[in-house]
Length: 423
Ligand SMILES: [Zn+2]
Image 1 (tube, rainbow, N blue to C red):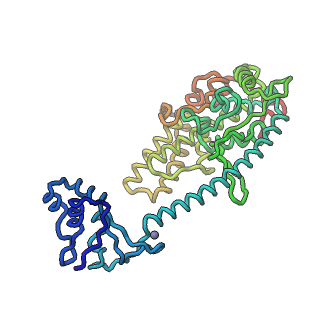
Image 2 (tube, helix red, strand yellow):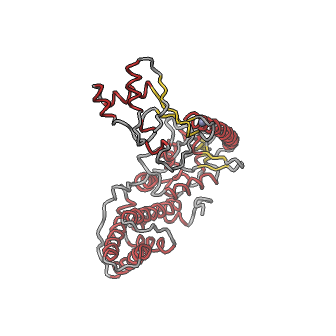
Image 3 (cartoon, rainbow, N blue to C red):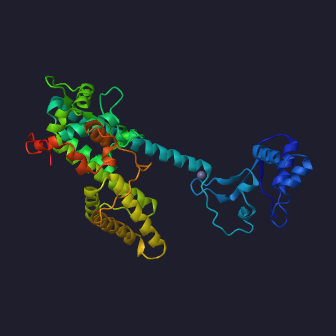
């Protein structure tokens, strides 16, 4: 058996002897001695021996050449070069790429990535410049806070409460607030942000984090609605300049007044009902998700929840949802259900049927506490606690009953200011 060609990087004769022994092959082409035998012979711990060999010698296998630069394969310890790869018994492909070539590849790729990143940054900077123009435009055409329709006043106030920047100069990205939810669902939040954008109350801020802005190489511009910051275009009456801090304290004070309730009753009703419906839907999906059932958001689901909410409080509807889910889930486990979508369907029809029976028999439906994973949203607090002054009233009251307590406002429904209800 031909021995390996060992190269030494040490001049010490003892070390050269140890390394030579380490790399020596037997006549059958396997290692002549085990590492522990050699270590024992020289009175060295095994790890010391490996370290010594690694530092002082290497083997070049000229039968294996780098497929790029044709330099021979280099082994520094035995595990780099298993016996089967010595060419004696191996029939595995012996192609390899040397460390130098791999590193060159990596460097090349990193360079390419850096160039792409620089281009992407450039495109984002162009996007920012465009946003800057839009912000300037918004600042030139501000809306005076005292003529804002009630509906938008509520949404804007909730938005500032949820994500207003520290100095109240702009709106931070919604997803930066990890403690409170603005509304019961991200989808609803995005819908409200779009509405405020459409009427030029807010616009995407050029100070948004880069990762929330996207420009494709083809120039298509997109943004993550929950990841961007926003500039607000409201001013105080008599001035044209944006003053978010003043607008905030004015709104915060104004919406809690009777005058606001009277002039904006339509907007309050609409938004209040919608928020509670969204909460019921979010709770339904939270519970469905917990049991591995598919989520629901179709017309049939909305209709079932609306019907239940027209008779009961959200707290009771949550109990109905949870109760139906428990029944369906039991039946599903006993095999009395045809797959998950069917089970999920059964929950919805179960809610409808239970509502009908509970109404017909005048049952006193159990009240649930708020789910720990679904605390009251900021917009719900603004509507129910701040404006209507009923602590978490959107949860514990049936809305029709609650709203009828404000009977005096209902006359104003017929006498609404133009544009109070934007729908
Ligand atoms: Zn190479």
